[in-house]
Picture (cartoon, one colour):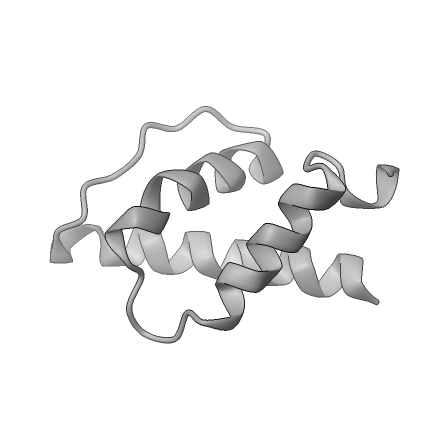
Amino acid sequence: MEKYLPLSESEFKELKNHLEGIKAFLPEHLMTPFWSWCNRIRGERVNQPCSCKSSARHWGQCVEDLRKFIRERSE
């Protein structure tokens, strides 16, 4: 369905499910899929940042962009 582009409907539901459990900490096993989804949603091909504290700003922006994407398509 075009509503979820550039993600598929199943990816959208998976992302939404994962985001519901994310507060202040992003588990390492979700970093690669989250970054991949961010790149697709943003239309970019940016290398994934490391998981150290110095990259927290990048990860925070990624999660916020994903939440915004979910909100906009859930309305």
